[in-house]
View 1: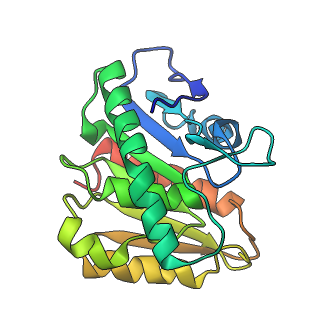
View 2: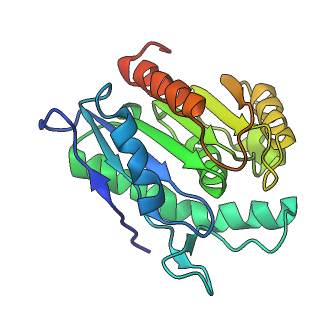
Length: 219
């Protein structure tokens, strides 16, 4: 299944040297996240941004898409969902690497909510390693199978609001623990007063993280 979405080319007008793939949450679309590119482009002038729409429309939500259906926050349902959607995101990553003539080490995944679940699931099961994974307001799916399936350990930054009533803050700590148990490098940050969204501090920290992983500072 082919997917696509809005793009923002490098701010320097040159051929992309790095690629940031923004993976949106449930019921949103690529337009919901491509705006982040404008926040970071000045400090990341050689980065191509792309925000694909997830493959499935959400019933009753005009222009809303999902990577997989969610009826309740049930771990087994989430695990089945990410596993079924992973081949679509993986194929998109491969397609974009080839499109711009880059390598996996030139690519970062930036997820929000369900997009963070997808980014963690796919990014850790790919080899060679991606440059990094930045996850906002998300959770760790398939934690019980990660130790067996992990193929790379890119740098990871998790950011979560302490007022999140959609995916509570504890889910970030659960994800961080699972990553640690699998030997992955993970940093985390709590955004005070932020609900299920991205605050100014999260934008700033996320931008610094991308700058470091793209410059090889975590290598």
